[in-house]
Structure formats: structure tokens, C-alpha cells
Image 1: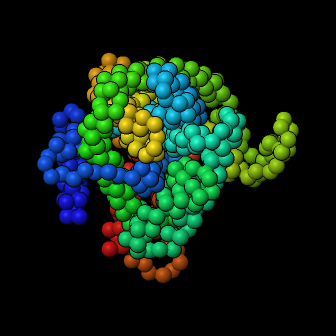
Image 2: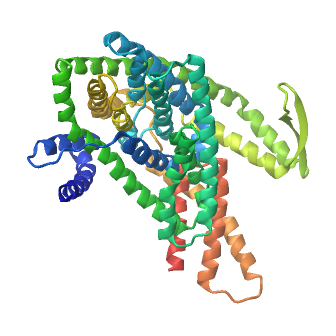
Image 3: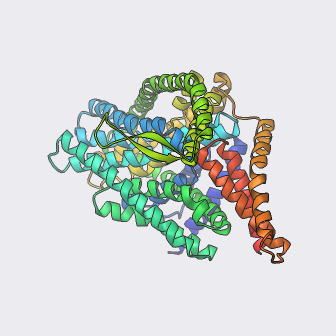
Length: 544
């Protein structure tokens, strides 16, 4: 017991060290952690670490996916949902199938369902590349696509993995697997949405930030466990609960709760993800020894993994190319309709209190008319204009598409998913080693060359510091009027108020206006988030 405690403490030290030293050494922190784990496994006295697969699948991955979902900007996620869903669902299914057939071909004694299981394991991408891209100042739109993809495709790949493993034990049809997949995802979305909404309502009544954060720890599991019991995907449910929470937290939770959540979940995600890489390093030599004894050496695993890395890049390129072309066509169409949208918005501004708009009826190609308020119509067209501006000012061309392809490296979920293979799975050690080598190899090849590749491709850069400051000034000008108006109205009640109370009214009014602007999406997520944090810090200072 004491030995395990010492290993756990040293593990936390290693995670902190790798996180700080990795960028300075020019080495991705996950690779550094794997190396530290391998070195530690050679030290005499270090106990053999064996982690049950279910602990990783049910105990580590749900909070990791939830933490990623909470932090993604809702407006940007909505705008990129088509691209993200294509990469997260269609590409993962396609990769699983093609890689599965490839693995079955190169490993003839591996049954097709197990080959598909390995294909599902190596299909999801990791978010490691986004940290590199952010530091190099690339188009934030690329970052959103990559973050959204790495968040959702993890859940989809693990749903496919579960279906493939189930197919090894029973006679199932493709139609049956398809229905099971749809049922698993749809029900998980409903469970995750309900849990996310309930979570916000419960925490809205809890005003102790420590207790509130403790409650937040339960959310990924409150979403994933019931979904699993109902036969749905607990991981999809955890992601949806995180998206709902991230979208509604600014309305339902106080600033202290949000700040506490942000810092705590960031630390927890760092520890969980780092732990998986350390465990991989600690287990790697043992897996290699087992493969050497049972499967005629490790060379076979390495060349199969190399072939898999090449195949994933080729499949991803073939999929991303038409996706970028379609995005370009949407941008051209948006540019054509931009004047018409502006003209319609002017008509809405000049209209009376209500206006008739068409809305889809139950039957396809049928229309019914309903009355909508002018404010509702103004919001809709303001959001549409903001979406058009977003597409035109942050284009995705072949250079950005090439970055999306090269950033599709494998990582923590591939490593974790490989370890969830049943103990009695045929060729289990070989399959795990292949998955490990794919993850390490892609991190070395793609992660290690991300900087030079970006400098060679020269994709569209993100906003400069001067542009960000100018955008912040425009936002500040929009927020000043409603905030000052709220303070003036507060003063009219004839009661003497303290400067502190007036400042709190100013902060609340400014935040409400900021959240309305966030819903429209006319300002970048980074500028909105920075202003929201500033207001939260001001309110916390006033309430101390």
C-alpha cells in the first residue's frame, strides 16, 4: 500500500514536471510522460501497475470528455457543428471500417470483429495539437474544429468499440449494429441534456463554491452511469452534459463557482490525462515482453502500427479535402446573400411590433405562418449576419485543411481504449502494443513536426494583438450604455445606495448584456471570455 502511495505521489510530480518542461524542451508533454513511465518501470522496487480496463473506461474517460465539453465556446461549436460532426461521426465510422479490413488483412488469424475493434481504438484523434496551434497563433476556427472533433469522436469511437466487442460474442447484423449505434447516441444525448439542465438548476441554489464544485465532480458520472444502464453511450451523455453546462453556467452559477470550476477541472483533467500516459509508459515494457514471447517478436506490431499511421493520414486527407471544398462553397454563398440579409434586417428594424415569418410544419415541404416579435427577428438576423462575418473573416482553405489533416494525431483515448479490451481477447497483447505504437508514433511524427509544418504551410493567422485590443474596445463601447443605464435606474428609487452596491449593479447589467452579445456571436470567444473573467473578478472583489 505504501509503495502504491509513493508511486501515486511521484506520478503527480512527473505530471507537473512534464507539463512545465515539455514546452521548454520542445517535447510534447504526453511523450515526456510516456518516457518517464518507461524509465520508472526499470527502477528496482517499482511495483507492477495493472489497471482494470473498466476503471479507465468508466472512471477516467467520462470526466476527461466532460471537462473538454464544458470549456468549448458554444457559439463557435454551433457554427462548426457540420464540420465537427462529419469528422467525429462519419470519418470515425469510415476509419473504423477501412482500418478494420486492413488489420484483418495483415493479421489473418484476427477475426473481423476484433479487427474492427482495433480500428475503432486507433480512429479517434487527440487534442494535443491544439495547444501547439494556439501558441503559434493560427486561425481560431481551426482550433475549434480540432477541439470539437477530439471531444466527440472519442465517444463515437468507444461506442463503435463496444459494438465490435459485442459482435465477437453474438451473431449480429450490420442493420442491427446500425440501429444499436443510433439508439445509443440518441438516448445518450437526451440523458446528457437532462442531466446538464438538472445540474445547473441544483447548483443555482448552492452558494458555497466548494460544495458547488464538489457537486460538479459527480456530473459526468451522473450522466454516464444511467446512460450505460439504459444501453446508451455514457461517454456521449457526459459530453452533452458538459456542453449544456458550459452553455448555461454563466446564467446559472455565480462568479466564484465558475472560477472554482474552471481551475479545479483544468487541474483534474491534467492529472487524469497525464495518469493515462504514465500508466502507458509503466506498462509498455511488460506489453513488449508479452508480445515477444507469444507473438514471435515485436517487429510485426511495429510495422503494422506504421502502416496504420499512414492509413489514418490517407483516409483523413481523402475526407477533409471535400469537406474544406464544401466549407469554401458555403462561404461563397454567404458572401452572395450578405447584402440581402442586411436589407432584410433593415426592414425588420422598421417593422411594427410583430412580423409574419414562415416556419416548417410537421409535413415536409409544407409551410405555416406564425407571428414573431421584432426583437426575435432582429436577434435571428443579427446572429445570421454574425455567422456570415465569421465565415468570411476566418476562411478555411487548403492550407487550413492541411493543418486539420496533420493535427489528427492519436493520443490518450487510443491508449485508454486499448486497455479496455477484454482480458480474454485473442492477441490482446499484440493489439494493445499496436495501439500504443500508433499513439506514440503519431505524436512523434505529427506532434513533433507540427511547428515546422505550420511554418511551411503558412495558414491564415489568428487575430493580432492590435486587432484583439480594437475588438475589446468595440465590445466595451456596446456594454457601457446598458450598464450605465442600469445604474441610473437604480439611483432613481430615492434610496441612498453605497458605491459598492452601485458597482455591483453595474457589473450585473454589464454581464447580462455581454451574455446577450455572446448568444449572437458577433465577437470572438476569446474577447468575450476575457471580459467575462474580468467582470467575475470584479464581482468577487466587491463581495469579499
